[in-house]
Amino acid sequence: MTSHDEHLHAGHDHGGHQHSMHEGHEGHEGHDGDHSAHDAHGAHGAHGAHGGGGVNAMAASATLHCLTGCAIGEIAGLMIGTAIGLSTGWTIVLAVALAFAFGYALSTLPLLKSGLAVGAAFSVVLAADTLSIATMELVDNLVMALIPGAMEAGLVNVVFWIGMMIALSVAFVAAFPVNRYLLQRGKGHALTHQYHGAEPVQEGVRRFIPSFSSGALAAVIIAFMLGGLSVAVADEMGGGSAPAEQVEMQGH
Image (cartoon, rainbow, N blue to C red; front, side):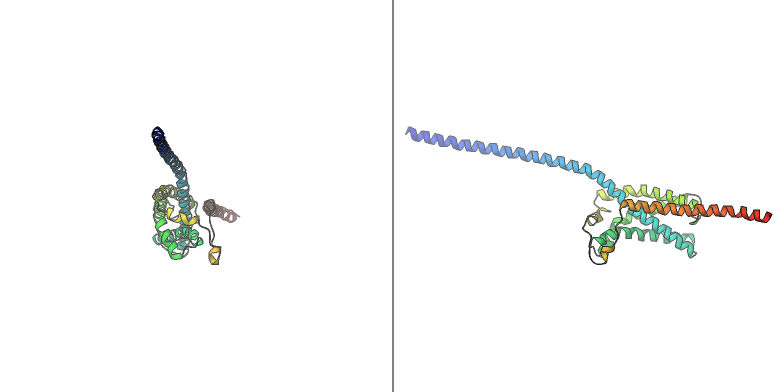
């Protein structure tokens, strides 16, 4: 009888021991779960801090793409308008239209290179870039209008190129926060970012589509502006020396 009771008591203690171990194990798992959640929260915070810099870099790149397209389109529009004798108003309309066209084109190229269809790529870019380009064009033309003589100066004029440099710089500053705001909300260039990291298509005509880095685009803008300014300075220096030479020849 005693041995039977002792056996039952031993079994009871063993079960209780297992139960205690099980509870301790569950408590340990709960602690691990809390620890994992803490680690995940810390990792998320670190990712968010890193993401802030990433958003700024993406916004700068997006704005630079828009700025390059706007600069090329505007100068092309002014050159065409001047060459065919359009009025100032129609020349500005043409320049703005080409600015949008070139801005959209530069953003569409990476999407086409990633394999996206033309229609789908244009739809994505239309949603991503329209507000940015519109902001840039509005500010750019407003600044040019405020600079005395910049709009009427013509392409071969120092005032025009200096005015354009100032206008584009202000336009970049104005469009940057717009792009950053859109990116933070998953809009704007966030719509095209997933395609930029895709493996480029290596077959057909798509493999010949060029890729432009932010540094290359910045170099294009700077070279474009400096080239136009150099031509304008050379023309004014040449024009200024011609009357003096004529006066000297008439004196002889």
